[in-house]
Length: 114
Image 1 (spheres, rainbow, N blue to C red):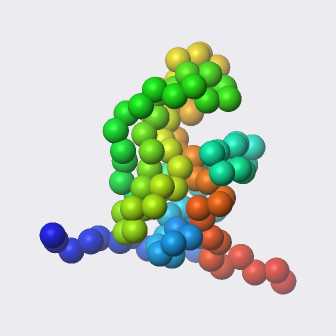
Image 2 (tube, rainbow, N blue to C red):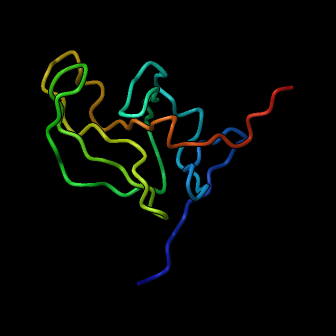
């Protein structure tokens, strides 16, 4: 095995893997907070880092059929959510190439109440 390259995100508000605390996404990349995952509330992100993609899989989600890939933390291999590969309904095409991170699988870093 080689060395694992881990990207650190700039900025004070970062989402991290709940298990190993590696950076996964920046708050400014959130597209929507109105999603549901297997474990409850989830966010739609434009970009994520330090993840690995699983194989393509067709799933019937709340908004219809999609081809998705589970996304795993590149460090600890915990499932964090999924990526939309393809949406079959025209009104859902905006999700293609976007990522869902489940809140239950993430922790927040740098979110201070002042």
